[in-house]
Length: 167
Image (cartoon, rainbow, N blue to C red):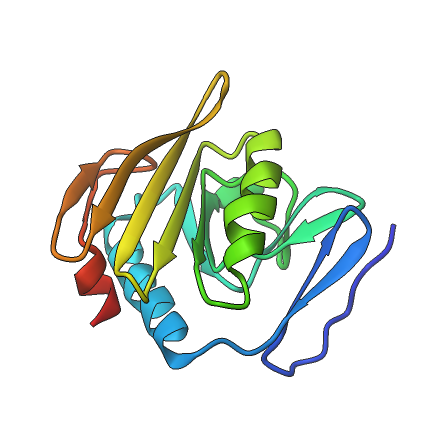
């Protein structure tokens, strides 16, 4: 088993099919959106689930290690730094340097590994896309823009408003 030991330099290190992906430091709007979503999710999260921000690697196999901006998993599945069971939700906050990886590459990997929900938050356009897994792959449940609100029960009941996450 290969372990990737990443330096603490504000970059994100991930491995996809044995290839190292390095993402540079993210802009302040990215971090602000991650923190706002963290607070919202933590307040609504039931005790059996864990909300993790950039602290758990998801390793579906020995050649792939991903670190979503946020993930929600069963507490019993979380190791100290690693998650091998699929999380119940993966969230990526889009930025110019991660857009293609998040929208195309990670969506495909998360779908292949049967992660039930995948959210994409775009701070620039104030848009939140909610994808839910069906037997045939991800289906778009909603695209919420700016001041719109959307209530979902997956992975638990919560009301979302993109502009509130971007302020």
